[in-house]
Image (cartoon, rainbow, N blue to C red; front, side, top):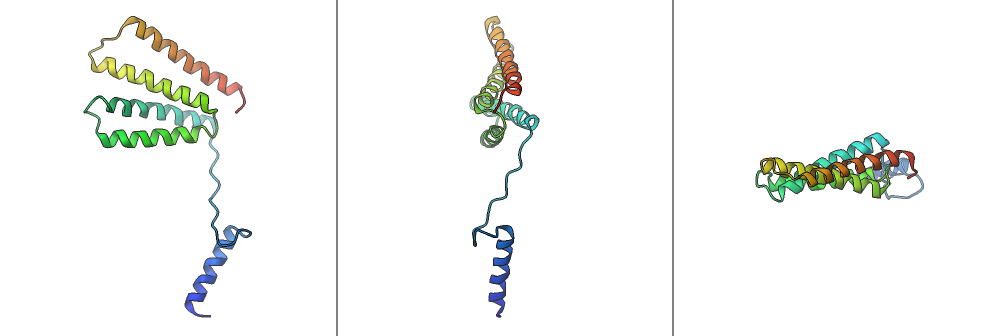
Length: 141
């Protein structure tokens, strides 16, 4: 057997060890299943990154590179979280965190100019986010 034939043989045996019944196609490794707590952590981090990229649309202090990276990471985290938590709940909490955070950033950046009705609405939104989290823990996926 030549060297090239040996390499092909070794390659085939390695492939068949990983996936004995599917020929030369390599099988993707199964994804690690996320715990619910880790999924919620991903949603919170994704929501915080949404604040970064949404604020970056308005404020030049946030680099466009940071905005792009934040978008990709936030959506990657949200996609992973939806494997464990219902997509409606995931997206509502993600968007809610982003909304609350963006309102806070806007208030701080404008020198604290925020109206009482806006504060009440943001507090209600926070209450609804907590309610969604609590109801998701009790419901099925």
